[in-house]
Image (cartoon, rainbow, N blue to C red):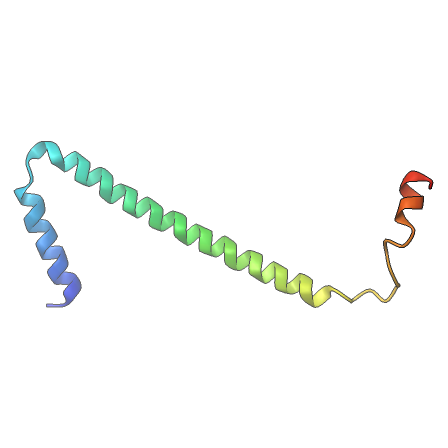
Length: 80
């Protein structure tokens, strides 16, 4: 029996020992754990996508050979 199977067996045994009114609490806790795992997976996917986008931007920086794009921007914006 694998360690995971052993843990599941113990959990089932312990759940059977619980009074009926505690079962809803256990179910709520299990649902909470499952939802946070899903949230974490979504977070990691978004983080990986942002990292990929940042890498693409970093590769592009310097791709324009037109000097400073913001040169005299204050004059353009404010007329000074």
